[in-house]
Length: 189
Image 1: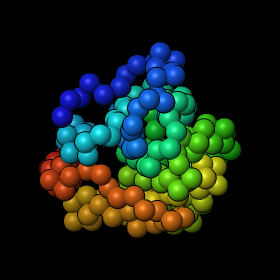
Image 2: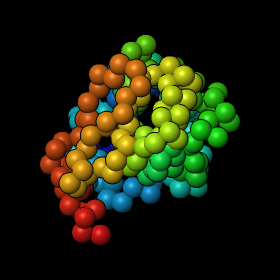
Image 3: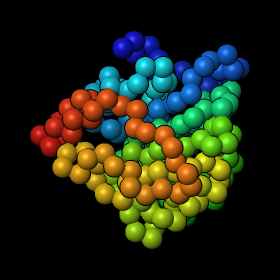
Image 4: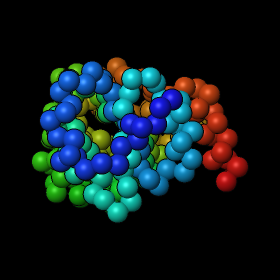
């Protein structure tokens, strides 16, 4: 797989060049994800992969990057999480911070087609009342269908996004061999 699409460029430099792309899926992978390369190697062909660096506001980075995209099927967010929280770059997205991110979250949602999905691969993000509130808030601000996990991901837990808000139709677009290898590396740590 050609990793030249592992983007670390300014969104302003890329602005206006997306409308001719036929991408239907974008994966945002937070820098804190250990062994992210294993996952990247297993991502479906034709998908775009974008890194969210530790020192940047992950929500604004995604919104800026997606500014020229339209009619995406799915946005995949791969980041660390906890009950009702998602960690993207230097941003903690939770029910309390949602209000500060309404505008960029709305722009993220505009990149999706009307039936588009956001799949969140962050452990325990959907867990408990805080998790459900975060997913509902994302649903209303992005107008996207949302899927996330209320349990750990990988290993014996599998890769099940068990909590849905809206009519989620997208599937995990990473090969099972990459998911298995990633899970084994996590268990070994």
